[in-house]
Image 1 (tube, one colour):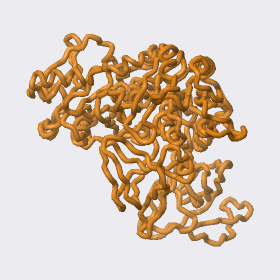
Image 2: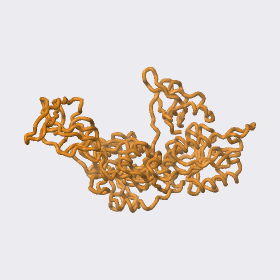
Image 3: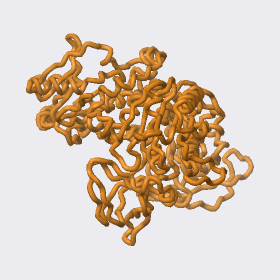
Length: 639
């Protein structure tokens, strides 16, 4: 199959800097890329269509950067003050890109063409242009553009001169407009009505062969890790099915819909600490101020009166700010004056007049929490696709909610293949080994929050394997098998899958875990993993886990990477990604260190049990010397 990757590498840039003011009542605006569309943030759909077409992805966003970084791509912010248009995003992308070309797309274009980059680049090269812009009919789409990185200086000059319109910038440059026949592919979503209309039609997963045709640089016999991961991400679509569960039962579940706050949090202006609520205008700047204390505001029992000039109210943390008060003075700096008996001017009974002395240097408005400061009524509190953590459940409870909409639990069938396998508990037999893969897979799936279905051990017979795979696909959303994906006399998986499924077999450029299969059997997704125990865990961790999260409707959660010094030399072949089991420690100088756990054979499960991290040596990396810095991914309970 011919590669679609252009001769010159290209960086993709998703423009997510704008606000969707028409998507929300009141016009306040929300981040369009984070709006839930078919069970996940809209930008996730855009990234999935663009990623197979480019070498790397960037996201341009000026707020909520953590939410965008959770998608697994670097986030760049505008560097042009006072302007947040597409040109500012393009400017930031050109400064961050490391390739000759940069292609831009908006974050609200979930149907962008799967050959967009190929056709733009082809036209730019053929026409000797520095910028290629997509067009449908007579309508150009300047935010769908391929731009040569050398144009950064021209853009700098244009912006410095006050230019803001993208079409006026590129008009005098060497540009070409490229016709695309499908106008709907460039549609964006601007109103709640458009969103609702498009939400109703569930997307159909593309045939695997079609996806592979549009994947840049596809070679099933030498597939880089990043390409295999991108193919899986583009092929898998979230399951349907939503249920409502009590908050106590939602830990680890995937939120199905946005949770919109029904109230302001906090619901009133309140004090951030114990002290005295006062009027900032009463306080002297250069000398102490004496105020009369007229009451107390407790958390849950507010002071019901108002605050006049020269008065203060004793207030506790969380207490409602009295009417007229705008400032809180912490109790540690206040001097309380011994109460004195006074008589009222009307001849009433004597009373005690309490007073306090406030030192100078206070700031009006200090230590005051404003109504809605944490969360405003009508704003999203939790976004669809989020895996619910303890803090999320506490937040939902603080809004008075008792149930949440969550995705139904994913069902994943697990089976092992091979006549050489024994079940745990069987007596030992010469020439056979105990099956460990089903147990490690069962544990990893359980930790991921899915429901594992144990389909047992399948013997090396074509009829038995076909029956087991079909049975598993009828009861599960996904099927995982271990063994039978390499080329061997008794490995029938390829032959069987040709009859019952849409599956491709890969030799991934990685170690361990080179042989792997991926596709679909009926409505169930299929993951064929190697038979060696460590290879099973590595391929699950770096391929299957992310695909299952996508299937669950979860926002992707790429594993965190840290830098550490390797304590030993490691031989590494360029042209493949290697995953070395290691243990983290702290050096005498405070630096993070990583030590390999002995033999790294794919069947040495003990090395995985003793490890607490994976040393990841990238595709283009060569040998590692002792003391070199390397990328390390801590397990942190993920496998």
